[in-house]
Length: 267
Image 1 (cartoon, one colour):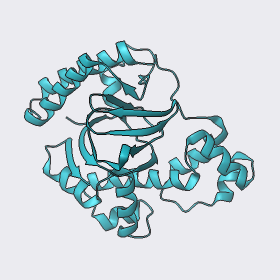
Image 2 (cartoon, rainbow, N blue to C red):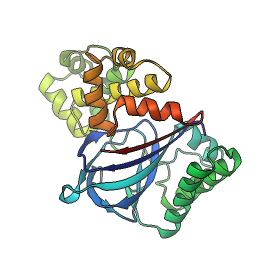
Image 3 (cartoon, rainbow, N blue to C red):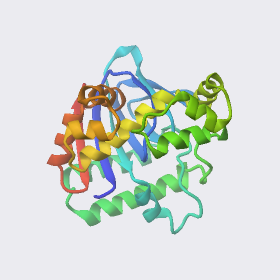
Image 4 (cartoon, one colour):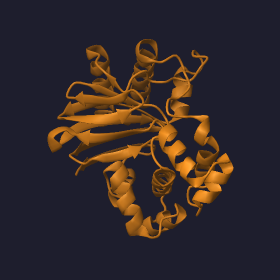
């Protein structure tokens, strides 16, 4: 289904603070980890539902350094708008990063089963996803409140990076955009966004490279288009943020039905 991406990961990797373009909701199947969020540190383990809003900063640290397994479904914003936009005057926002709802878990697990076994049955998949999103909206939505993690203190600097993530941009340029010193900019950006300007730029470059790879660009060309020094630089950043290599991601995209990508990665 176009605009839907299913990901399954088993890993003991520590993921740094990062954000996604899209909405995400998934199941924690095994193990446990701790995540930083706007609510503070939260823990999730087997049986929990985990969520993330677009541009919401978070990280992930395995407890006891033991592998944990989880499955996620990421939805482009157009999917959310298409399913609930006509009925909801304000955008959807997941209320909490960790949910404990056996009924919703069963519904989400059923969606995963459909994606795996009946991915080509468009009506069945779309109907199940629509019902899932409506359940989330009715029982676990935050009423469309402004997305957490955004703040005016770093808005202009952040926008400069968002507009051209591949561009070479100086700290002075970002600070001048906010009308503050370089040190003030670093402190304000990290406080309001959750990471430093450079870390945020790396995240945006990984997301840009990911899109270019999905569009069919060669890995070296994707690295150049996203502003990385070379393919190795892109690979290191890609794995650090996503837990999967660019080559493995390209393989998964190419092996899946059009518009639907499944990645299974043990790292």
